[in-house]
Length: 245
Image: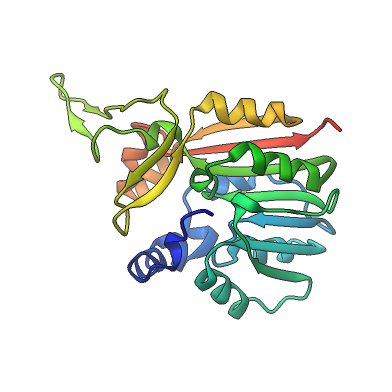
């Protein structure tokens, strides 16, 4: 079972105060890049893996989606998502993505935001999603970039040339990494970029777009703290399509 860090009181309080928790999709700097990859959702059956407070679920319904299923391990997240959703055709369920089972060919599109880096058996989850999608269905997700997940010490340092550097620790060594973010002992699963892509391909997906996200100059001008995201990628955006049987 995945670590349910989001239901820990200190973590949940801290997470609830983040800009993306307060302002939803508009508070996520990477959202414009993600939105550009999304297909027409009108009438589609959609699953959101790690739906959190339900921001994408509600947005998808606003775009005309037929049915949207939001899944999350956190009871607190699901409770708030249910409380803030009134649209018909939406279902929220508590689910551990490590053990997820979904009916075959039951969805036309799958989405996930910053959830898969908590998953140990990524291959199993990808195969489950593949089976649950109809042929030709899209699959768009974001994860923490593996470069971001493998620093040897927190934050950046100043090199001899005066430039900021991001030391990397055992990038090729995959597996559990523990970090202190909003709470101590947050467990994440490090995978190389190659492993992520090859797992998708090996499970029957075709890669349609891969983006190592960085903020635009305009975004940095509006939010100067985003400048550090131009020094090393924090978020990986993947768009794939279910192509093989």
